[in-house]
Image (tube, rainbow, N blue to C red):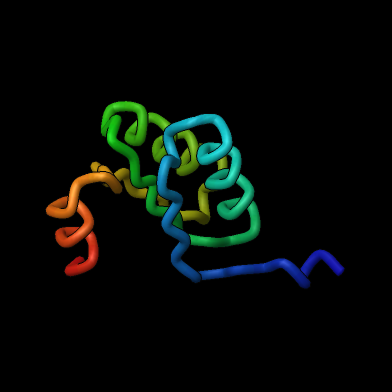
Length: 81
């Protein structure tokens, strides 16, 4: 049953990933093998969360990304990555 929720090597983008629910979601996805993008307006906090995930789940990739969903240019730049 534990393999039922595995997401090994899938990429998960957690928008608002530096906040409480987003951080918990990022950790949960990393625990099940996902590569994580912590997208948040607060890049400093996103970097902290990404580093914590990398340290906790050594097999998981986690990268921070400065992202503002209310800014069209930010969304467009993210879409082209």
